View 1 (cartoon, rainbow, N blue to C red):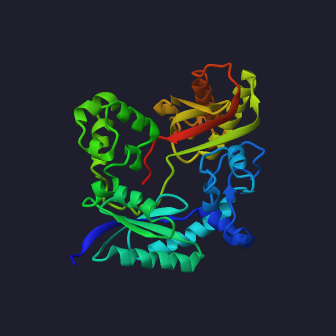
View 2: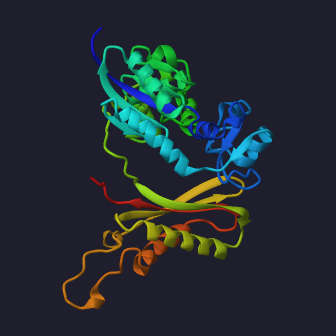
View 3: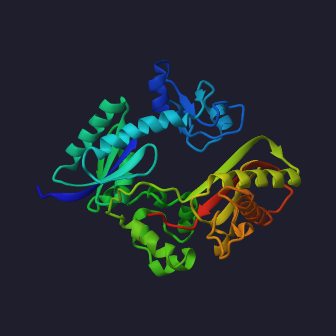
Length: 366
């Protein structure tokens, strides 16, 4: 058998819930939901649901209250980031110890690249090593590229290995709707359906020019490539660096006074400003979730001169000419003004259940 370059996608099964069931053995086999502060009577969303909870229709991103209605017997637990970070570090150490390039995607998943004549054997070995190091299960997808490997993992769950390649792409996905492809959501699928494109096979056969008219000159042709199962083959082991940093709050009671909303955005903006003092900020985005669950975002670009919290000092010995210290009032004022400018683009009048402020970085760190 010829040695071939493969991309593997390793994904921990029901990661947060599995960590909690490991910490609390009495919860094994029970429906467990991790999210918010663990109180379904308060506002918050599901971060992860165990397979037992998913059988009742509970899924990630769902309001905790909805999860409680669908599964009254669920055990609700708060998010414990420190615990998940510790287990995640052990998982990634196992993957890096293989000597393969590892591209981390988050707490619970990563891509690996390798040359081998039997990727299934390698994948099962990785799963066994992860199990030995953490007592947790993972699934492994195998593909010619990242797209195929990522999708393959879903077919391997739970605790399995699955290979999806260019040769088997249409056999597996050809008659499925376009949102079976990683990167294509429900809204795009609906637009494609209106154009007569209802399956992956039809997407691959679609006219790129026609899709460009509907989705734009870049996205349209890109969708056709996805229909063919095309994707990146390079696995980048460069450590992950966030592209933005933000804060958001879900309020237990809706905010109805726009003056309160304005004050809350200012508070969040100044909090974010204090936490982003080491990289230039190119844009500040405000997120508003109106009741019952409609989310809208608007952003404000910062001029180049305002992007750094501590720009180079101008010539001259006068101390008054020195800029504000990192995280100081001048920098906080800049972020707050940008956030308020973004907020001004919203239409007041509707109750607000969530507010967020995010600073998007302008640089590409080495």
